Image (cartoon, rainbow, N blue to C red; front, side, top):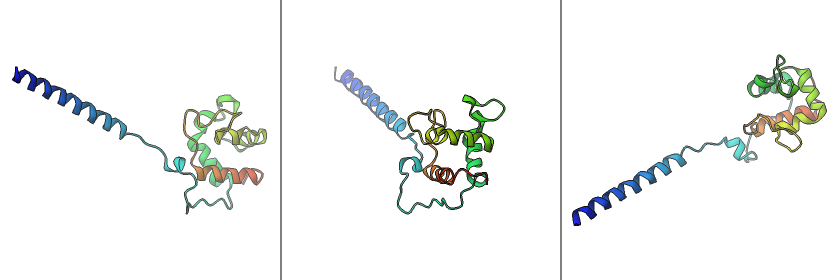
Length: 134
């Protein structure tokens, strides 16, 4: 009888340890973008002076948007692969709402996190300067 109880206790202990380790390992896989979690970190360096379409906006669109919003088959009839396409969206007010995840527009990138805070600040500076083709 004592032997049966000891074996049962060992099995229960092993199960408990196994489930505890499994829970810890699953929890440790969590990942978030630091810029997304802490967009206003003190001492952060985000140069929004002389932001241009060619140096900032076009590369961000190429990396995050053009796969779905290219000129050939633009999702939602929004084109981000050309200046004219982005300018039309900026003029409608939908571009900033979408990339900043504001109400009244579908958050972009679709099913993804907002762009990093510094990229958003640069794009906002470009929009506030009249969204020039520079």
